[in-house]
Image (cartoon, rainbow, N blue to C red; front, side, top):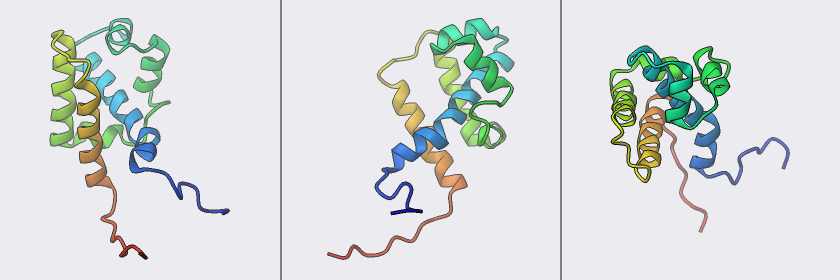
Length: 122
């Protein structure tokens, strides 16, 4: 079994570790850069610690795909839309995870090579 990390991992399980931190970091950056929030205010709105937001800004956390998200017009627009909903208190807590999923799917489609899946053996 050596060398088969992720053998039974679901795509979302991998995405939570690989892409979601970059989405959170991008959201924090948009709130600070575009809306002029302080680290403390952004942390409160995102329900994170100020230290976590600071680490996102310094790209100590979630840094792998932050630049991809912020430079891609479509991905940036999706993150900016989330930020707008959060800042205007129109964020539906039930829908926020779905928005993250949508951004994650779009990000994955842009950065991952298209896999050719073999036919199942059964």
